[in-house]
Length: 371
Image (cartoon, rainbow, N blue to C red; front, top):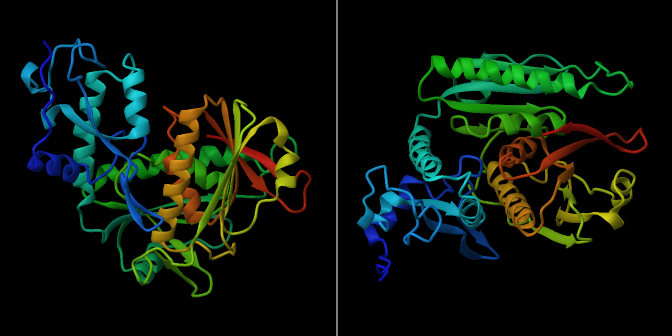
């Protein structure tokens, strides 16, 4: 006779969610599990068993470890907070997501949350820019109020070309990797610091760099407000702009290739995309702001709202269809590109291809990097 399933006590439930900061414990996901949608709070989090309640469930046959006894399978120690997509993934592929892996996720995530509770004035700055004059520590400290302990500059030379006369994206990719290694070296020198990112570069390079910093220390992404001539972070109101509305549509051809259009700073032309990929032969996900302009998404709150929508839509589509490729056609600000790069999960997503837009060339979208 099977044992009845026990619910977590109220205090245990709160402990689980507080220690995880309401985020998915999968280090390749870490999305917020409660958010507002159409004026109502939505929860996409699951209290997932590491070792199943019953011996016939996922990982249910293993011997309990990490201090979890046989009778404690419903204890909070054996529960990991996951989004619904990650919960489904780990239970369907138990040969990959063993109990050791999930217990490690849980422990490392809770430790990672603790590292976020630090003084944000102690910072390492990363300036990612294309050409132009360099930005020094003093000017960043003066304009942001941060205590910058170290500076990494990743500067991409657009005049470097590949064998076909186009931008040498692979060289840019190498510079990203080298820059990230410099960041890691600095991180070993200082404890309790926040990584502050200042992007002024091409979208494909920022997507790639963002994918490198996904699982590092706490990160804040600034954006440059050209009208004010300074770097900005949070909205003066501390809230998502009332003007920001996102509209999405999906067209399916049951293809194993998915094209994703995200129009924020400008509209993305279907004709331009069709020059690269035949739209009648692929699946298409389109997300657009209700009105596009260069400063449409400037502050952190708006960036997070768009990132959340992008992640939710993509994870849902990936869960519905076994795609081999995802192709990104983006008209977005630099800071948003970094954040979208941080959402890419190489363990659960197929290959992601990024494109660079050039109005002077045909086709206007040129393949840049595979992330």
